[in-house]
Image (cartoon, rainbow, N blue to C red; front, side, top):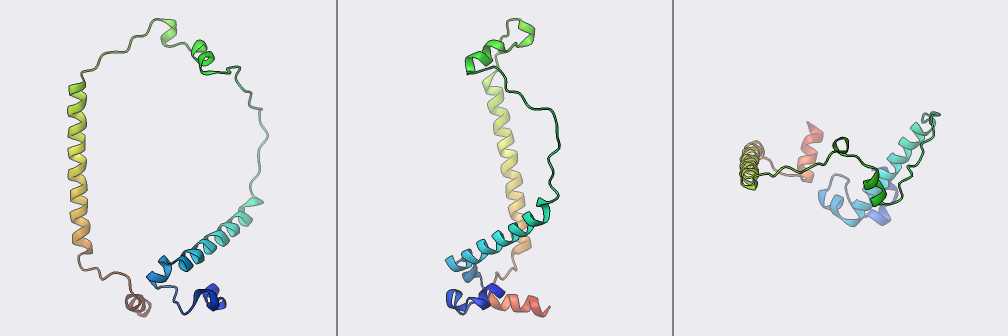
Length: 134
């Protein structure tokens, strides 16, 4: 709010709690400035507490390509490995059941949310004033 008051020539006659201002380019710029200043405060507060511990250096593997990695890998102790065949219809049915259950969960959540927010008035300057008075 101090930023708005000290830069009225840029922000104009706006209020911080005005939703249309918050969504405007000027409001977005103000929010970005706030986030950057807050992040800088956090950095200053923790920079002196961050200390790297000494440890063993990390060596790079000798692998230089995907083929060299494949050549060094042993799957299953070196035995021939076969991929089991899977019945795709069983997997398809399982996926469809999971999707149906997920849709049912979402519909239930939406219904509960709609019931809980049915009487909501939305954000406005008057609503903000009511909250302040409360």
